[in-house]
View 1: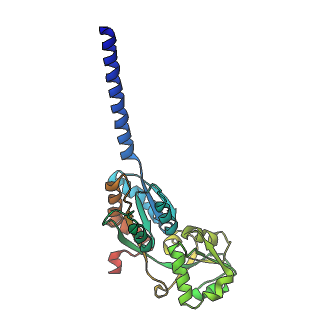
View 2: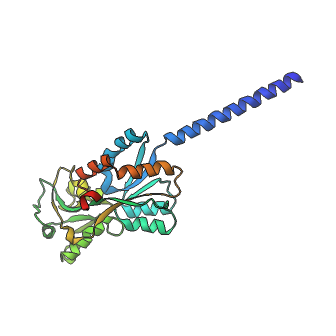
View 3: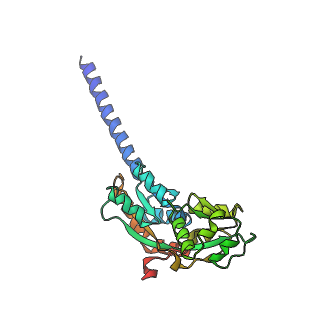
Length: 260
């Protein structure tokens, strides 16, 4: 009986030890798992460059989910496991905040984007101004119903008096990246796209007057349901810091310091 009791005690201690190890491993996995950042497609090139900078500064890894701001907001509403949301339009952040999905006092504008008319260097259209879209057989914008750069493109065309004249040649893309891809592939002659994507595109572009569209403000916010709130706040603070600002400016974004 004593041997049986001793064996039972040893098995109990082994079980306790095993559970402790599993718990420690799970905690370690939680700390090493990358932050999930859902970000507007227009930020893709800049954010891919920022990821290693953030990791060197904090030791934290990041995984990105790029799409249109409206689609990303909808995913969060549906319960997608997201730590940080970066929108190209503050309205989508405000929509999530109204539903109680945003961590209090966690939403900050950190940059402003710009719109350009993009064409291939070897393409059929030599664009010098926005009105040259009338010369294109087909041109693309992101879907204005859920993509901020698409909304800005529609607004610019409307204010320039061109919207009605381009309906029969207009192609809608899912997001800012796909808009540029349509033009790069030759599926359309031109595209109204984010300047931040154009700078590594190999094409040519002309700026669209900022008087023709409302400011395209980039806003970072922390999702209330994130299990890693402290780390998510660190990413938000990083975006508003000096190293990130240098990268963002290189991709054509204006930061609050530039705008003041």
